[in-house]
Length: 373
Image (cartoon, rainbow, N blue to C red):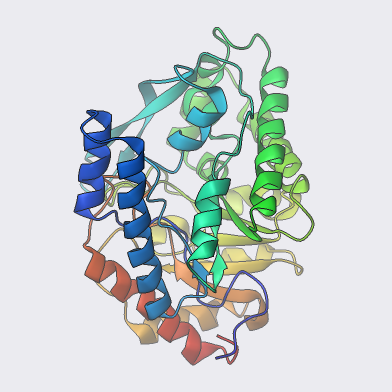
C-alpha cells in the first residue's frame, strides 16, 4: 500500500500510549526492589512488542514504543541528563483545569546538578523499537524549554547554575549529542513535545510568568532561540517536527488559547519542518489560524481527541480537514490525535480498546482523503 515517502505520514500519531496494567505493576515492583532491572526490561520488551503489533494492525506507518520505558514524557529525559539526585519535584505555580472548574496542581522540576550528556538517553529504546518493526520508528523528546517554563529561574539558579546562559548552553549541548546518538541508532523521525509556547496566549499563564519577574515577550524570544538551536543541531537526514500542546492530563488542560497570539513566533520564527497542532476543541481556536502558516511547512491536524473516549464522526473529521485545506493545501496536511494517550503513567481517560479505535479512525479517515495514505 502506498504511503507518503517521508514523515510525517498522512495518518500519524503523537506517541505515548496507554501502559498495560501489568507493566505499571512491574515498574512499581522495581521501585520497591521486588524485581531487578533485567526482569523489568523483559516485561517492557514484551509489552512494546505487543503494542507495536497493535499499531501496525491499525495501519499506522509511524510506530512508537508508547513511551513504555518512561514515567512521563518529561522526567525520564532530564533525570538522565542530570544524573542521580540531580532533579527533584516541588509544588509548582501552574495547574490543569477542566470545564467544571476542577484543577490538578502541577509540579516544577528543580535542577541540583549541571545538565550534561554522558551517555545516550533514549537511543537504546529506539534501537529496540527499530528491531521489531519494518515501518518508521518514531522517537519523542520533551521540549528543551520545559524545565524553565514550569519552574522559572528558581528551578534552575540554585546549586547547579548562576547563569541562565550557561544552563541554556548545556541544554542545547545535551540535545545535540542525543540527536546524534539517536541517528547513529537508526532514528530518522523525531518529535519535540513543545508544551510551553502556545500557552502564552492564555492570560492566566502570562500572569504567572509576569509574577516571576519576566517580560513574557522577551522570554518567548529566548525560548524560540533555544528550540531553534536544537532543531538546527539535528542530523540533516533526520525528520524533526514540533508537537504543540496546551496540557493534557486525565482530560484536563492547562491553557485555553488559539494560535494567532503566538503565530509569528511559533509558525514563522520557529524553524520547524512541520507541526502537530491540536484542534480537537474550541479551546484551541479556529482552523482559520492556519492562514498564518508559511507555505513551506506541513501541518498534522490533531482533530481526534485523547481527552475523551467517545469516537469522532468520520464525516465530521473529513469536513474539518477540508476546512483546513482552505488555508493550507491538502498536500501539506496530515491527520492525527491531538496529543498522546498517556503523557505519564496514570494519565488516561479511556481503555486500550478505545485508544486503538481512535487510531484506526485516524487511518481510515486519512485513506479516504488522500490517495497516498
